[in-house]
Image (cartoon, rainbow, N blue to C red):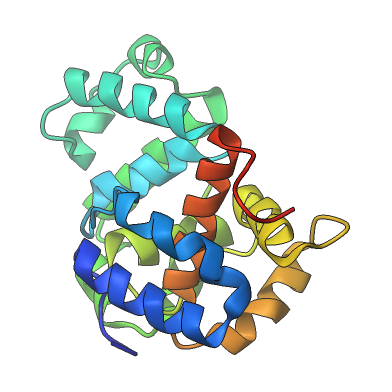
Length: 216
């Protein structure tokens, strides 16, 4: 499984079992991975735009906003996005900065300053560096694009708050780890850090619903 793209839930389950065998503190999350609604979104403009919309909002809010946008624009394309008025974007949940970021992204694709096919051929580091040149695309957004858009197997967005809190609970830490501390802990999970991230995310979500689960 190491080095292979995560395309389906079966790929994720296999990688999760292997990384949990190497890192026992992830093991309590393993029984929960079957319920993780993994779906590879695929590369391209819609996925990156959706990730911009998801920045610093809850999963539920992000899903609601994306449904509204999809209802207004089908399919979601760069040219179509540029036809939307500010009022329409605002009604879909775009803040003023996210309007600018979405517009800049659409122009970058139309003007061929951004080539999603080329990004798909790059290694992780180069792809992240290329994506973060875009206005409004930081490391978290770029890493999540590699995860959910390309299914890369060794990505862990260490700046993600749910990952920090989830790892604190699983590892029994007294305080929430910083992004660098989480990234350092994740070094031993190579080359399956993506599966580790999904395990932690799934545990974090499940723990919110059931406090009796093992862990802090």
